[in-house]
Structures are given as structure tokens and as C-alpha cells.
Image (cartoon, rainbow, N blue to C red):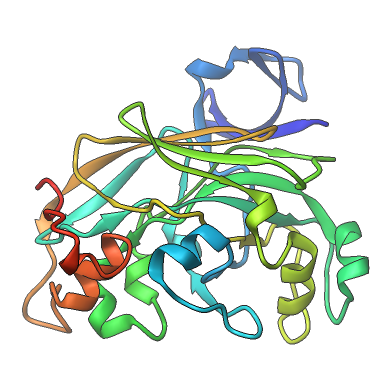
Length: 281
């Protein structure tokens, strides 16, 4: 396996290779990985995410999987990186983490079979599919603002090649406490299936990312929290939550809401019967 990252080096975006605790640029310059300013490891034209896929998440919601996966889109303006700040806008409070694995496309894919899909994948990265559920009531169909607001798509720290996605553990920590503990073994549709499914009607090009779903345990976080997603063999993606300096404008568009659906989704199911308190502010 090899791991490739993108960092700021002397003010320029540079692709580097990880060698132990160091990152090495093509011209030989070296820097410590823990001192680097990271960028998203890839530059996608699109980020596509699957809704329900992990069995534990399905059970948590008391839901049923559809006959085939369903998806939503995260605009590339939502991209964030390892070490980056995730912004919770003023006036919103239902910001949830979702630890995931990102599939990175390596060559143009269109109308391929699941058996062929592996050869179109460049590698994998760690992702955190943050969701701003305050907008779920107005964007439930598209998930545009829920999942596509600025900073809500951290990826990284690197792109890992030749990684076997089978039997891998995925864990999310909030302020050092384990919050999600899942495995790729509980994915109903595997990485190859997802790529082939999307590529039936949407051309995937090098750098595009597919987020493959999250296990149970997604909950709201607040400014000051540190969220870490650790995937066996891919590394650990670390981000911190900050408060947005301004409120969502009130003179245009739908406003943040706090309906039963918003609360139930953010808190992991039908929590009104479980006596669970709302999140910290």
C-alpha cells in the first residue's frame, strides 16, 4: 500500500507521499506529517454519498433497506481536510458527524459491472459526512443544505492505494470517547457495487469520491468538540467544530427548524420515547 496526500508547502499545494512520520514531495523536500497543513487528498468533480448501507444504522433507525441503494450529492464547495474546522452556523444546533470510507475513482467509469469496478478505483480515504439536520425539513429530498453546506465534507488525511476494504473496522471518537464502532462487514452493498451502480447513468472521472455509508452512533456535536474518524489501514481523520460568526440570513429562504423528524434523525431514531435529552449547546 502507498499513501498520497496533498499539503501546503511553502505556500503552494503539493502532492506528497507518506514515508513513516514524514511526507516527501517529488523534489525531495520533507516535512513532519503532524506539522503539515493538509488539503483534501483528491480534487473531485463530484462527491456522491449513499444513504443507508450499514446494518447497525438500519437497525438503529428501525428502518428497512430499500431494494437498491439511494444517494445524495455533496457539492465540492463542502470539501474540507484533515485538521480543518467544521463550521456550525449561528442559529443551528443539529450538526451530526458520520464516519465513513471514501472510494476514490482512478479512471473514467461508465456502464461497468461490479466485477469490473475494482480496476476503476484509485484507492480509498477516510471521510466524515457531516450533516446539518436543522435544514432536514426543507431539504429532506435533496439533502443539499443538510449535507452540502460549507466545510461539511472532510476527507483525508491521505489517499491509500491497494487497500482491501473487506473486514475493516471503522470507529469515530468525539473528544476521545468512542462514538461509532462499525465494520465494512456490515455494509449491505460493497464498494464495487456502489461504483457500478452510480456509473450506470453518471460518468465517474478520476478524483471523484463516493461515500459508502456510516454505522450506528451518529449524534450532534457542538463548537469546541474534536471528532476523529479512524479506519483500519486508512488512518485517522481529525476535525474540530467551530461556531459560525454570523447567523443564517432570515430575509430569504427556509429557516432552520427543530421538528420531531429533525430531532429524531439527529439523535439516532425515535428518541422521544427514550428520555434522551437534546444535545449540548
